Length: 255
View (cartoon, helix red, strand yellow):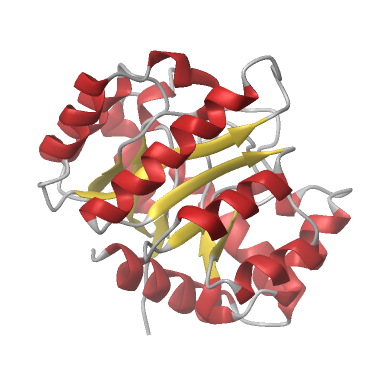
């Protein structure tokens, strides 16, 4: 049995309330032994890579968030390729589609999404997916263009039915603090039906802080509240959720 947790998606470089050392100390105290930091902005590529090099239990995803795809360049792609030779870089992310904020460049989002999927395939790395109000296009593009990379649906926000479709395609479902929200019925129902071997935990710090700290700054230490809520919903023990989600993360990310 694994006796520690992994936060598979947390932007510790964006947490202003605590220092990196405090964040990692708090995580350790809460039984969170490994954390994965995704890039979102072009400037994050260097930041995430340097965090991974500096801290033993910090790993990274490199990629460009869909809202930032206008910043994609050949030079950025070359830097991602160069940095991905490190065993501390465990995936391409967070990448995908976001139709919530600005629909004016959906075509460009799709083009850069496809480019980054192909990059992940070339590097033989997993893909960490951001999908907001773009479920069908995200799913269809992954199905058409992904050739062998493991897919993690970060901060899954679809229905239980959509989760089942993703799981049929071999994708992993990562759940975060939203599952602890009282009115998040769809998310709670999803948490009940994801097979143990396809389930991952995350915080998406500093966002989406779980109950009982909702409204405050999120941090990796709080992933334990996500684990406990999922355990309660599934009628399982905390230790069982800890074991299966940690085992899944270590297996697919090679950490």
